[in-house]
Length: 232
Image (tube, rainbow, N blue to C red; front, side, top):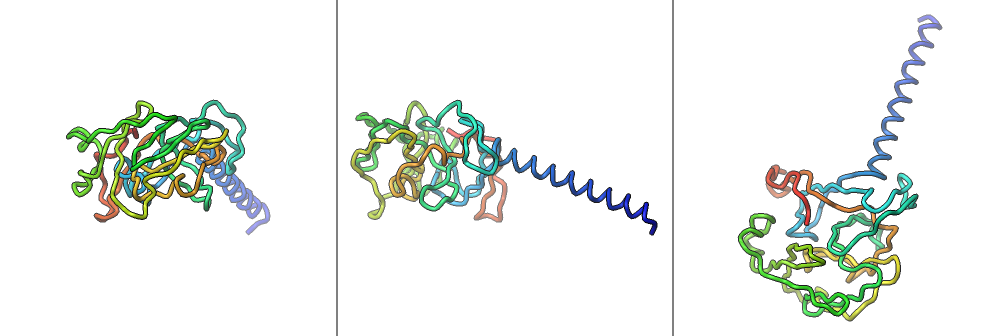
């Protein structure tokens, strides 16, 4: 093989590899700082989000971060009560999906599974047939599901009696830059009742929709009725 040909082949592969690396860097930077999807492996947000759902995460909902870090370049909004967010656990750094219950300045307490925010009790109602069609509420959980209204966002919560679950706690006031998160499955969720407040810088973005859903207990059969559905 001639030296000229060898150089041409080498230049081609070096150029191709460089282009591929740039493309990967751009793609992962977008995934890191702009938009992503998150696979849900547990039932802590049942019945709103169930195992096998893949949710869209808008990472530009509140701020812009340096890719691959939690360093904020700019902020233009903050999480609000009732929104579903993805964040890093202050306990072990794992990515979690929970609902924002309290924002900085709020005083929160729970009594027999009923939430009180700033001295006002949240309102609850029993689900109707429309709710059962809208959410994937298993028949065995129908009697244990109620609809909670949090800052005009209505969403289902699952309440199962369990002696080891924290269904009541004394009032706590959130400091500046801290948030209180809870799962909609109130009796199977590691959340702020156990690991405490979540710092603003640990919040990745807002979960806005279910992109696709696969039934992990039924050979990963697609749940087409959940594809591209918005989250309450």
